[in-house]
Amino acid sequence: MLGSKTKGALNKAKSKGCSVLNNAFMGESAALDEKGLGYCSSKASSSSSVAVHAQATISVSKSLKWWEKNLKPNMTEIHSAQELVHSLLKAGDSLVVVDFYSPGCGGCKALDSKICQIAGLHPNAIFLRVNYDELKNMCHGLRIHVLPFFRFYKGAEGRVCSFSCTNATIKKFKDAMAKYSNERCYFAPAKGLEESELKILASMGEISNDSSPLVYPKHEKMKNLVNDFSEVWNMASNSRGVMKDSMF
Image (tube, rainbow, N blue to C red; front, side):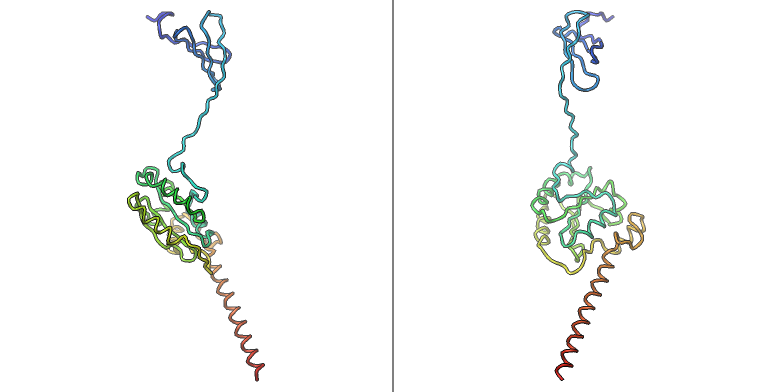
């Protein structure tokens, strides 16, 4: 049988919006603010004594997940296949690194800090991060079957290399960055994904199936570019014809 004086007994009371837990420890009672604003503490002198409310700041910080901790300004999380297609096409001549990872992948976690560090050293490069678990259908369509996995894209050349990488083979990643991060101007729009990949993603319902400017702007741009060159060539030919006639 538990008595009122039993050591360690917890009695709940109310005082000024606080729940007081009295454990008869050194004559003090601890009262918790029910609104979560702090804690209350009082000296247990009598039954009529009122607990003194003492404010305390409680900071609840959301712990960042490992793939969110070391992000750089040039790193973007991709949330859909449509977003990946659009991001590659609007990258222009910039080097784009697509990083496929999974929260449960130990190799991805071990390599993440180094990838983020390299991204910080190449602010002109664009890093697109793809969570395999969230975009599994898209990854299957792109034939991504091993993690971590990286794809490098460069302007009109499209995909220039792709490989898996670990801490032990990080040199492979660094060499690719050194090779493709050089400034180069292409007289054509960014290629992005292969047309066969676009068709697969469209058949899976991951991207729009029509030739909208968002998905297939490169074809229209290439057509316009060819027309522009044709006009310049015709103008040059006409100019040569006029000069030839004036000579005779």
